[in-house]
Length: 182
Image (cartoon, rainbow, N blue to C red; front, side):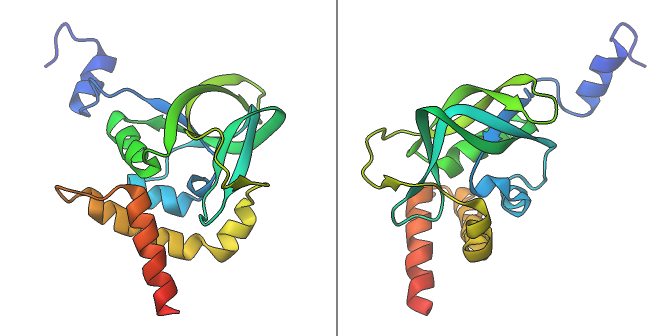
């Protein structure tokens, strides 16, 4: 019996959630795919379509995933993954690697036009000459999704090793191996 403990706290303690924070994460690239999110987090969290104003989604020369940077009078469509735990946020941080900076942003939810604070992974190199044009999710889904999921599975296996490689190294070795097989 839990005398003196409010019922809601009792449930949180029973579920092991006493110290787990819930985060919102705006995604705009490969993480728009539920299949990729499922490989990383072992679940597909609730999400809502959203818009990030004053940013642009670029293609990156030699990469199949995009980058975002602040650009006035532009916007990036994506979605907000909701209820991300601290350990899940750590996995996303590792996946996005050192090329991205996790940044707090304000997004507009498309269903309600409510504003929401969320994390977003913003490209660190603001003057990167490899950024160009617009990145297209539908094209990525048709051309790269299957191999990207395999690469993501490899990333998760590497993450569990004591001395795991950075995501960029996993990405490069996977796609070099994939090209060699063709």
